[in-house]
Length: 390
Length: 218
Image (cartoon, rainbow over all chains, first blue to last red; front, side, top):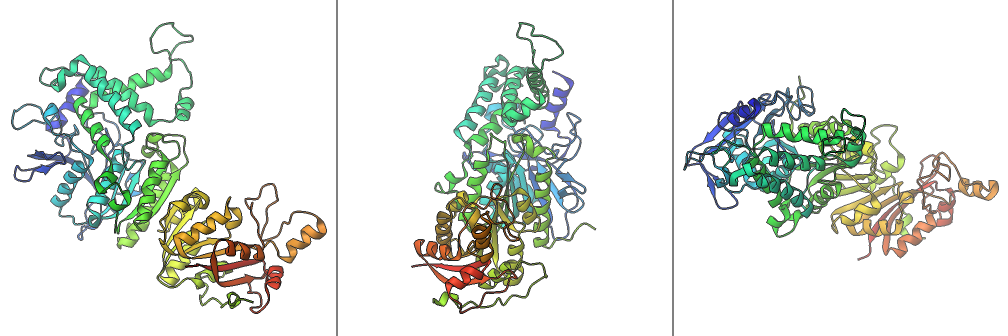
């Protein structure tokens, strides 16, 4: 195991962030009917909660993200994953708002997940952890918000799987969400979305080191399988244009094809690098759980097949954002959300940001996206009566 | 002629001198507190006017990203969308008024758009440039050229306006769409209403733009 992998593994039990442990008498009640108890939630906060507890923004992270939104990552040493959006003077201004981000249930950065110790066995849960859904993740977040004594969040915001959590928040706890910003997301996982996730899971399970999920007990890692899963997924985060612009058919440190299966092309080298760095920081079983959570997500199905019914009577202000070159969660998926919100009479704005950067655009400094976010959040803050930054 | 021509002056005070006359006129046609959808809302000037002065629950639809961003930054609820495509997704009776201001001539299927407006809203308000105005007739009739005026400043080859109509054409379309004209106002080139009791041909000749308040026939 690499030093980074060892540091990452430590996060599951001793996260280098804040955390709260809910005792056995406060279990997480899951969609499957199972309970998790005790439940640990690892989280970060930025800024200060005001006396009225009315300025809290919950940031929901994506598939392989974590609570380290706007600080150096304790494992990789890299900047937080959304520093373009969250920080002093940023659209989510930490001088003004109290920002909370928690690691999802099923994750591997300190919130209870397959790497966490199963109290019944004293060993890592592995696949004994009950299957986690988006709604379970949101229920756990609600427990954290209760822990803070916050009745109503000023805003819930997130991209991709984080956007699904935003939608679930608005549906499950409409009175607790003043404003909601689902970004680059979908109201359900499509067949194609499930297909890509299944490729990733099969790659992990096909790795002989996976050992039916008990690899931690045996001191090995299904690194190759997890790396392949990440490589396949990474392609879906980028657009054809962006890939071509960045790599084209350029060769990697060579002038001609080697007539071998070496990484002749820069794109191959790039993907291999993405795969390798990913396995250092992420747990393979955790990847199975979070991808499954997305696959099971179909918000309309929980409301008699009507997405509009999920938002009926919502007082929440919505701002839906999609990116024109995102083919993972395409603009049409966001439009379906907008149509449902319109049908339910909710207040909704919608922007399809023109960019060739694909799904990953939500993590990047895309000026139109930043302008929309800032405008929506500032206007919502005025409507909430929050004072501007001093 | 019809009682549709009994036009009333707007009861709205202009918030500033630059607010377009047709917007003030439209705002004056909207009942306070109504639910309104403004299609082609641009930077949200009318939405702002409606929200501030009429206490209206105002929503918008706008094609341009810049326009949508401007609106969202002002705290307005605006959707990036296209009247030709996205209006059909709104539920029936979702709004009290659906407004299409200076945009119908730029839609691909004006009749379908108008029918959808009358489905989505109990009432529709449409303002448009009148292609029957004497200046336009003069340019075609005497110069033999497609008209370019202050109001319609595009050349024929780069204009977004693909479906021009005259006031009389529009009245015929309203008939075909099965709607009733509740009010109609023609504005001259100075933005003043054309004489109220004038016949249609007079409006069609001297009105540079027109504003119609329509109601679905029940």
